[in-house]
Length: 373
Ligand code: SMG
Ligand code: MG
Image (tube, rainbow, N blue to C red; front, top):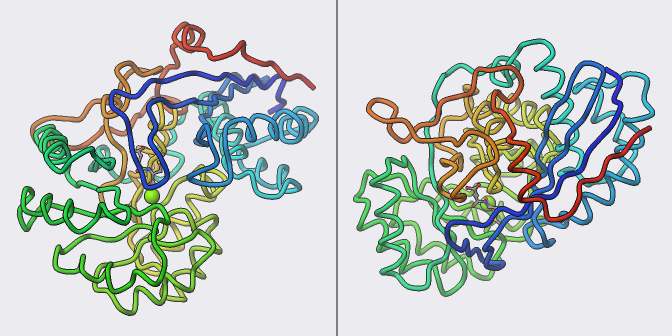
């Protein structure tokens, strides 16, 4: 396709409750949306960068800047763009994977809408519904944590993930394990809050039979994760460290991760996410779909990705209502009966969801920018 224009929209999405991680408290998401307008039609992509560079070095203002000054001009001047060509065309820019991923997703949405194909079909989805977990932030007290977890269990979520940090780990995990009983699926995520000096402390999580511990150490520190995996029973799972399929293979081979969290934004796009999935499957390493508090646009694509056969653990693919009172597409709602705790994989063309443009305009944090060739 030829891309005629690329629009940058910034939307403020208040959260239904504050979300606290080891790196801070978030009360709203500042979402950067990309719309590509092409001769084949339009497509939307969601950038998962946060307002501030705390989860990763990427952040919304940085992503918008690199898109406006480097990435978008390249695509606007290219004679032909396909989702499969985007990563190569943008490869001259180092890093900025979340920005690149948003553009690639928008191009893919346009391409698949034009072809009448869904993300799920294109990815190779093998199921119509995916099992969902929920990520639970650090709470003001244990009682509030237990009340929040009980609510999610009642809603049907199949797995609980607790955010942990030094001072908020053994006690909340013990109490939530007690609440869930021995069969409840439970895991923890430290978002890099520990160092290898904490290995003996983290070993004290072993009796709680966790599915995994996610990213205890620095993004760059593969070696310490491998060392930890030698001394604890709980499987180690990398999130922030996994920036590509090649890094995933390296981390697996070094024994630093025995389960992989896949986030398309973090690896530079859904096509690289597919490669991470494929190689992990070849290596018999289970994967699950991470989340970045996406609106319906990103959530739709994540749910389609999570429908691939290697995604054998419930993902952070929660219902829209977990984060937002109103979504900017039709909301994702957990199923009932045999589909309790599951989300249905959209089957319509592209992401399969419709963006409520009036809503996007209404919640705009600034006038949208339109870039042309
Ligand atoms: O979308 O449910 C979601 C968020 C899941 O915990 C979640 N994401 O490290 O995995 C992670 C975090 C990153 C975002 S924290 C602002
Ligand atoms: Mg994580």
